[in-house]
Image (cartoon, rainbow, N blue to C red):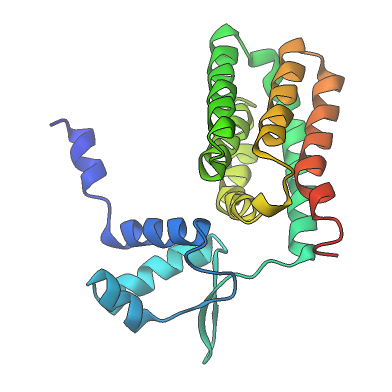
Length: 220
C-alpha cells in the first residue's frame, strides 16, 4: 500500500460523515429545510456529538446547512432569489473561464470531454439523473480548471456543492433525460469549433436554458 492510499484512508471521521450527509441531501433522503439533530445523527452513525458537530460545520461552510442560535441546524432551503443569484454568478464565471480555457484545449482534453458526453448519453438512456448530474459537474469543472486563473477556479470550487445541490432538486423541471444529454452535446460541439463568441453565447444560453427557463413560474 502506497503512502497516498494510506492518506486517503486516514480522512477524518467528521469529513466522512459530512460526505454521507451531503449524499443523503443530494439523494433527497434529507429535505430542504429539514432539522438535523446532533443527538439523533450521533446515535445513527454511532459517533460522538462533537464529530457530528464538526461534520455539520463542514456542510455549513459549504452553505448546505444553516445553524440558527437557539433554534438548531437545518438543511438549507433555497429560494428563487438564491437560484437567480447562482445562475448570474455561474454565467459570469463560466463565460470567462470557458473563454480563457479555449486556447488551451488540445486533442487530449477534447477526448476527455467527449468521454464525459458519451457517458451522459449512456446514463440518459438508463434514465439515471444522479449519474447525469455527476457528469454535468465533471464536464463544467474540467473546463473551468483549465482557464489558468487560480482565483476563478477557487471561487468555482467553493460553489460546487451548491451547484450540485440545485441540480439534484431540478430533475422534475427537465423535459427528459435525453434533452439534458443533448444540451451538453450541443455545448461540447460548440467548444469543438474553438469559436470564442459562439462558445460564450452557448455557455450563457446553456446555463439559462437548463436552470432559469425551466424554473420560470416555479420559483418566481
